[in-house]
Image: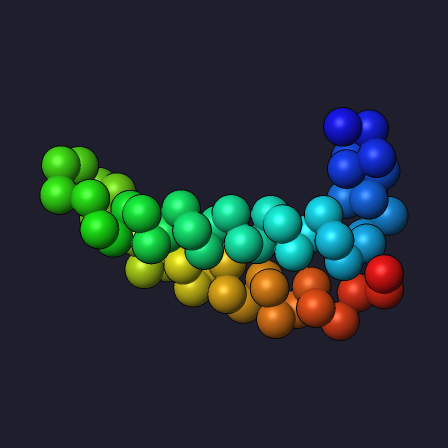
Length: 62
């Protein structure tokens, strides 16, 4: 766990790509669930933030 947190602090690609991927997956899940309207409402922006974050983070050093 501390390796993950130190990777986040030192702006390493691996941990940040994992966070971006989780955001994308969360946004898709929010889009597909039929029960909570606020989750459906914010699903596109969460997916978009995750996608843009993944594009930016892919330029970070290993």
